[in-house]
Image (cartoon, rainbow, N blue to C red; front, side):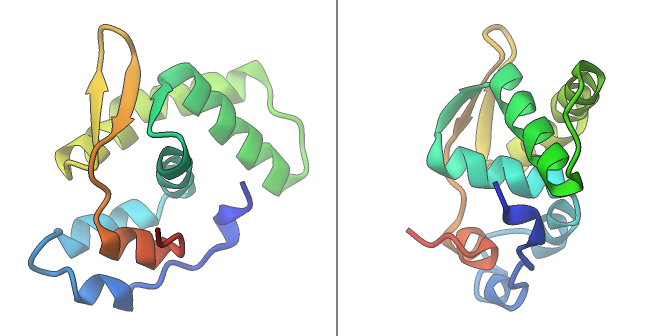
Length: 120
């Protein structure tokens, strides 16, 4: 993915202070898996949690120059399910269907995409 080295432009969030809880987004940007999930969801608006975990595990292994293991993937999947996806859903960036384990990007604000460097 290559986006774990992207430095989010936090000044781009200033313009969205009325539309998005900036502190929550900044905390979210502190997690490389959350940033990479947003990038992947921007390009793939509907994805299964397992696929997202695979992508994030591969991105982490690539940046560490290692090979992702099943335990790496499982650890990331658990973190997605219990931490990252609920945070993204609370911010209303995604919807998560726990019956189908499907994530759908609903409305990542322009200020967030700008801050991450992937404007439409």
